[in-house]
Image 1 (cartoon, rainbow, N blue to C red):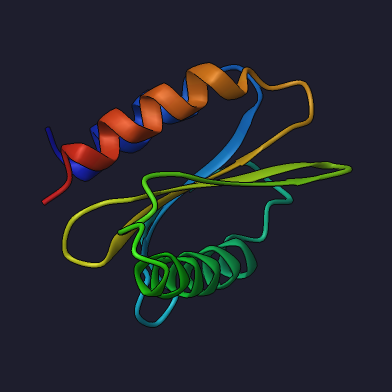
Image 2 (image 1 turned 30 degrees about the vertical axis):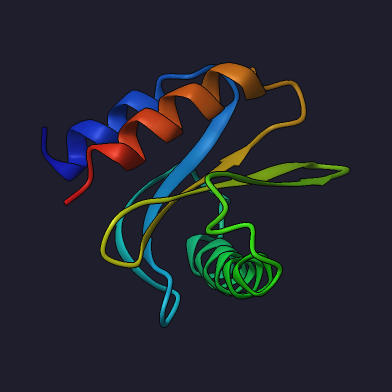
Length: 114
């Protein structure tokens, strides 16, 4: 399955406003599918930085690498699922989105990267 197909699976979840594949090391966007008005660069930088910091902190605490990150805000959420080769799958979702389904699709898609 190619990157575009993986992004498509996540964007089909109701309430998902955009999906990005991000290089966590530098926060650069590798691939994206975004609705109008979604700032992909900001979401990529935030998620890349957050996943990197959480990974370092969790490993220092002896917990290993996080498998999923959910940053919830008033206007929606940013979800991140780390994949192989320092890639992170990021979704920007509306407050009424089906977070559980988005999470399942993201974890599955992140596992298929590479």
